[in-house]
Length: 457
Image (cartoon, rainbow, N blue to C red; front, side):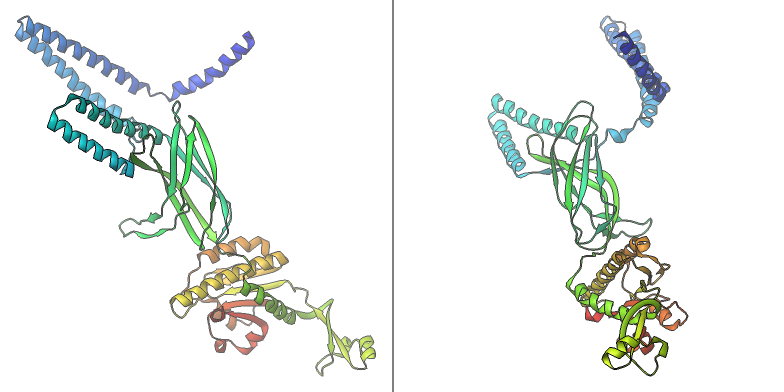
C-alpha cells in the first residue's frame, strides 16, 4: 500500500510541474495585487464614510479621493493587461436565438399577464410575471452552458464516389469538466468561398445536409454517431463549420451556434455499371481484339488464307481438314496496353450538352475502373493532364480525381488534335471519348482506335 501511494505521488509530480510551467506567474501576480488594491479601496471608501459621519469632512474627502485613485489605477493599468492575456474566445460565444411556436405562445402569455398586472396593480400578478421572465433567463443561461465547450470531428472514407452511399462518423466531444450536454442537433450548410478584395465565389455544396440529433453527452467525454451520406454529383464538397442547436430546457427558444469543422472532400465520378456501359463494353472488347492481332507465340484465331498472308503462317492441319487454305493469327505481346483519351471540348453549354458531358465523364471513369480490374496497363490523356503508361492500379485514383474536377469547354493544346497529328506515338489501342463529329476523324485513326461520341450517350 505504501509503495503504491509513493508511486502515485511520483506520477503526479511531473504533471504538477508541467501545470506550474504553463502558469503565467506575472499575470497572476498582477491579478492578486489588483485584488488587494480593490479591497483596500473598498476599506478606504467605508472609512471615508465613517469620517464624514463623524464630522471630519476634509480628511474624509482625502481618503475618498485616494480610494478612487486606487480603483482608477487598477482599471487603467491592470484590467487591460489581464484582458490581453485572457482567451476571450473561450468565454464569448456567438449564439443565434429563434422563437419556437411554444415560445411565441409563452411570450404572448407574458404580455397578457404584464398588461393585467399594470392595470390592476395586483402583487400576485407581478410575482407570476417575475417567475415567467426568470424562466426565460434560466433557459438562456442553461442553453449557453449546454452549447459551451463542444468540439466536432467529421471522419470520412478516403475515397468517395458520386451516387454511392457512404457512412461518415460524426464525433461530438463535451470538454466541460463537470456539466453534461443535453439534447443538441447538428446540421450543415454550404461554405462560401471568398477572395481578398473580390466578390464571394459560388459556395461549395455542404457535406452534411441532414440533421443529426444527440440526446446526451456526459461531461469530459464524447459521443460518436454514424451518418449515411450520398453525394449526387462529382466535384468538391466543403464543410467549414457545423451548426449546433438546442431547445433545452423548456423549448421556448432555439439557440444555435457554429463550430468550426474544416473538412473538404473530392467526390469521384460514379463507377457503377450503367446500361450504356454494359452495352458498350462488348463493342470495346471486340474492337480491342481486332486491333491486338500480332506476331507473338499465343494463337489468336484461324482464318481463311488471303493473298497478302505469308506462307509460313499457313496451318496445314486445319487446311487439310476443310480442304481450304487456313492461316494462323497470333496475339500481340502488349495486348493489355491501351490509351484512354477524354476530349473535354463541347460545342455549347445547353443543358442537354452538359448532361451528355456528365454521362461521358461517368463512362470514362467506369472504363478506367474496368481496365483496372482487367489488370491492364493504361495511359490517360486529357486537356492539361497525361499519365505515363502504367499498371491501371497505380494511376486509377489520380485519373478519377482528374475526372472529378474536369469541366467542359475549349482549352489550348487539346489532346485529340495532338494525338491525331502524332504518328510516332506507341502502337497501343486507344479508346477516345469526344464530342467531335465522325467526319473530323481521319480514316486511318478510325481503324486503330475506338471512338465514343458524346452525342450518342
